[in-house]
Image (cartoon, rainbow over all chains, first blue to last red; front, side, top):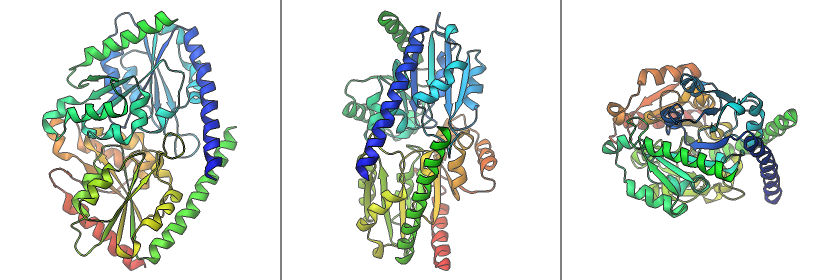
Length: 226
Length: 226
């Protein structure tokens, strides 16, 4: 039974990777850099996007919003006058807990790829499955909020390993928490040594410049590669 | 394709429910009341357990810890001298994002059912899939932390609907957040009208007495039903 299950899962991931490759080819053709943006529920992904999507000099940003249900985040971002497409995962049974390549593929026709340079895909809030499914992205970024505790890298190692940038958010709350930032950074290094990290607060704006610079760097890298 | 997928999922849930029934029969035979305890990562489940497991008068508590990897929470709880069994979900591929009835079934031989009255199953931190899989529990309880924002019931409605108690945690941080508690409670009522809720802080202990009382009430209910 166990063996069969593993085989089926591997086949599903192979199929996902094939579709992710097709997405990537479409994005490359249109000259769009794609970020897969992930975190636990409530870590601050949408606020971190609000901080940057309308203030990247010369960069036209679009957002693909993944949610089990509703369009709360998409509505927030649309108010910044950037193109936003909502993708809900609640067809089927209780709702998929992640975006996969096929879901993103189904959204491509609704995306104005010729009018944007950077597409940020806000994944479903979840620290497990989103890390397992490539969607055709150029880079994966995750957010961990200091309110979640120092132990998250050790409990959800794949997510921290899968990303090339970790945003450590909500540091404005540090004076009010029993939280050891050094311990979190140490735990991050245990599962993904030397991964890039930016310490910031979406609320106060501290560190947001570095997040903006990082995005500009990824766009430049993708341009060189093209 | 879509139709086939839905059918497979329904069959998987049927199989899960059958095994959950077998678990429930085993728990009932041993006179053990079982709580399925769920939340997003870092909402405070383990700290909320630390607050009650050793201080329920006359009640012998056991804990089943579900994690993708590691035994950090189990180690914390074992220091309170209650029996703790660790269940890791990372066999297979990148790790299952929830406990299902079969995983819990595999842990039953390791559980000292004859020596406990209450078993609390701490599920994997995730607001989507854990709500879809019954494990043979008597009641489902979820934690939502005020640091996660007011919108979570609308974004993860199945989780809020599946539970008979919502613990609203981390209220010691309210003075430091832009957070409207009334708005959260309103949103909870939108998806699960009048569901029981306890407003508390695992850190300061405010509201923890009500959480302890609620557990005693469930034990009394289960005894009457038996």
